[in-house]
Image (cartoon, rainbow, N blue to C red):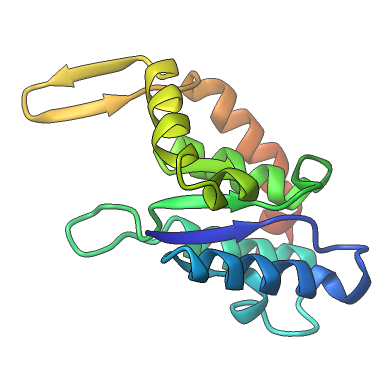
Length: 157
């Protein structure tokens, strides 16, 4: 599986690079290909620039429209990180499975957690298209707009 690693960066010693690299290495040992924001975001980037780069990459499609990433691995402390919480919400809104790093590293966890996540999402079949709905569009739009307001204001300047 191709995974994107998210977690706290801002205010962490060394931008938490060691934790991201350790996660990437452990996931690789399990047979996953893992990307981290540290290889995508240039040193000196502002938070807003980093979020634009990270969210763009996270939502980038493969040929055919499927998400580039099969899942998101969340580092400890991700809930306290404004950026990681936003990345998690965007990934889930885009139908990308999100789980804690420990769950991706447990060989039995991805299937069980994936089934539980899928079961928790109402599904609607429309012909050959299956649409999963996790949250209402209005709340996702409001959350994204609020979270991205600083980045959007900076882009307009």
